[in-house]
Image (tube, rainbow, N blue to C red):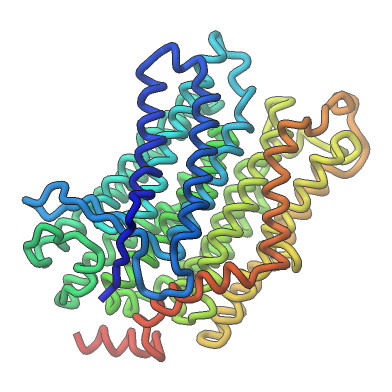
Length: 515
């Protein structure tokens, strides 16, 4: 049974309540909207300091436990509790989320300058970011499945407005498509949550993960519930063929919105597979692993090929993420502790590099309003800092040794090779594609002669450098000093892989046939 270690100070509840309250107040009180971005920036800095304090309060070597746990009765009649707690993985994801929020706020500082009332619009957008921040913390800290589901669905509200109201061309259509995909996944998962409760013990804390993980389910029921959860997480991840909402959304959303969406919120898919699917449905996870591994390999190759064929810069960046998420899912379901650790590390490394890619690409395209790759050429002569930071971010994304993406991708491939050499060989082809989808657009956009209409572009200013510099530093640190993060995540990966036993794929087939 999962151990829970209670906290004497409700730091997780405070991390949820503070941005939620500030966001609601800004949206409700018009005078606060004018100062909304300043308030939001201040709150986001306090949030970051609080979560850094939280990192000093847990035992990073303890496996299979929820720490900083809080449990309060909420709706005891149906077994729902306000139950929060973190593992090493969930706390790392919260740190990533809360570190990106201030950068996104600063990056968006001047994006509403052309609006009829710039300060009001900027304040409202900042308030939506705060609400999203609260739901991000709640999702990664939830120990109650019902609370997790509530946050999983509620986060769609601020995201819908961040995409539809504050995006560019076709933003409303993209927001609707994003909402429909996400709602469909959520409704499917709701059926699983309800079914899970039917089979769980009728207690005031029936939905606690540590209690549900002890529930013995008939295999067919377990498999059915697992499928509902996995579909929701595969949409969020995003995995082929449930990925089509992502390129449209990334092409229409603001760069900052895409940073939080792809850099953090899409990780809910892979996080849910690790934190919910594996402990709650171990037999079904093992049984379905071969199919999921196949889908992961398809995502790796398809995402890379699709990225190479893109003419829109933001769509290109989003398709690279489809390929990267394939590596993460492969590492989760191949049944190797090394690969699982690599998948968790990948979630963090990708969050950093993709954030930089979206922000820098946004700084490039906002000067012309065009996201078409063909509209640019010779930009390294005009904007050398922008070109250099884009290249470094891209190299980190495609796993250049010494940068953040290398260690997790290496761990996933090595761990996969020890279990399934053929799958590892296929995944390596995705590494080759990565070099193409990075270098080809770099050559088109940044090299060659400078067209006449490009020679007056400006390079990154101090505000923009401030948002990019921490991300570049993080890429280097994660690339050359990866041991602390690997050590922190290894206890979680060891506990998760226990569900696969010693020979996962053979056991999966045997388990399925015996049932």
